[in-house]
Image (cartoon, rainbow, N blue to C red; front, side, top):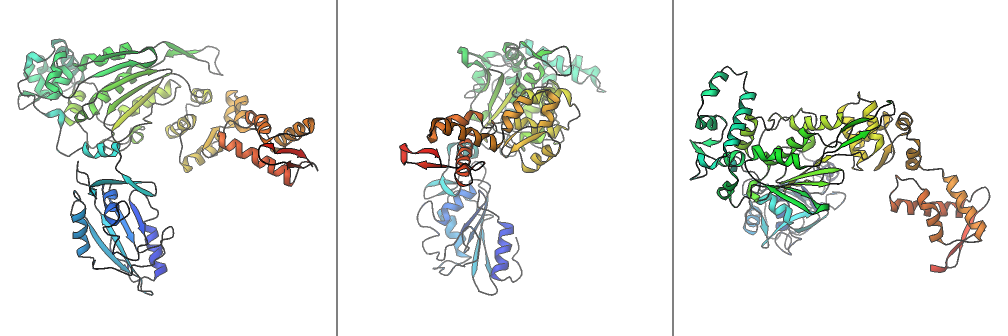
Length: 562
């Protein structure tokens, strides 16, 4: 970032606001007029603590000499013995783990007032290394600092390092006797099917086992690697992979059932899929006479999900894949977050992943047809659920340390499923946004505006719901009315009728009278506020000449007609 041309204090304020618009995990504003005790002073409040916090995320900038909230330029007035040159070395001395490359201080001066502002540019932490200050690692938490949370600490200590591949490591001492013969046969069969159109396809039948393993990336320099043992290894080969458990746990919590499955995963992922209960379910389109009947889960989606867990998990966390069956949905979890982008980036198939946590394992699984490597796997799972008129699979609950993949086996909102049946022309992005609406997840303002213009949603942010237009088309007017609510005139009339019949009423009575009649789109707190506003309106302006007022105080207060 180059220094701006001479700017007045007001112009400098605007320049700063354009580049550091708000305080967050990347930017911090400080009005420190003196640096004497603020560079290295009280832990959690001084410069070195903020440097640690920003570095332990993705780096950023600390702006010193500006007013909080406004970024008005007040300037640093007492520098003590700190200079732009020496403060860098002093900060480095107080922040173990901070990379020296990238830490720099930029000084800006207001041309009219002479006020000086420092921009402290903070680099990102080094791979798998925490940045400390006062013998602690820090991070931003809202508007304040806190000691580094365990999830963020683990994310840093296990993050991907370019060039390292756990799955490619040679397993010293492992031989062909450690591989399962049935797994080798299946892997060769799948490899042959996938490459039958290659010009060299005729040679595959003559390959030795060693040649096949080399072609399938399951050996490194002629020796078995971890990929081979994961995909083809005998059950007892997990000893070679210790402390990594190399396990998928199938679990039905409601029935206290849990069963582990280990290598060879080329075989056992199918066994896990077969364990998952998959009865037929029915849909009843409004425009059809016969029900649509289909399995609760698409078998290919389940298998793709399991294979993704195996391919992309962080094996260095020594965790396991868990497949949990719940009422109406299946949840797959694995250690390690997404490495390249967000899951949503791959929903339409346009993004291609550029890096993987386990390149050798991913390539081997691609070669034997277990996964896709072009970024289409997630797109295909999304498309399959859409065709089944069910909620889209999602990754809600995922973090930097864990991936959570949920496959839905029943409807959440009937209106959504009916809409998919009757509007196959909807663009995929709108289906994705509507899916988030039915799950009560937030959508961006521009997405909400698009859906509203298409008359697909109504309601107030963030409580959107299916619109009247769609309700008419899907014969769900009753649910629409419950979401939309009735008029204020109706609610005020109810209040007056109740008070007139019983002479008076407490606030608790009136809440009980109205709560279940207010729109479902309002949260419990919003309903309480709505009732307060209705009472305030009846007190100040009344209804058709009738007003109400409060008699008594505290628990004895009651509303009466005035």
